[in-house]
Length: 133
Figure (cartoon, rainbow, N blue to C red):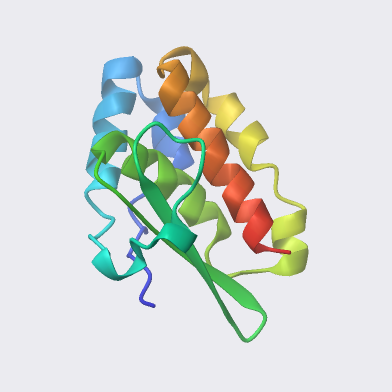
């Protein structure tokens, strides 16, 4: 599994964006960084609870975890990129100490996202946590 280059994804950019429209534009741009991965689009990789189909896989290499994500929605892919940039290449100890939901809450995105997108985002976080077990 090859991970996407997410070096352009930055929480700091979202924090300094002047308004929701600028944040939304960044999220859409980041969604384009995630390549299509038809090979992970299988029932066992499908995340339940999301309105649109989204897929997530995890690979462990020398005690580090790497995740790959796919979806048809650019917004969901951009939001997933925000999560993946925090988790890829981390050890189990590092991942256990992460508060993904809390870090997203600091950005204030939930007030701008539809309930289905918020649910999808939390579903992705839950699936990341499940894959660590």
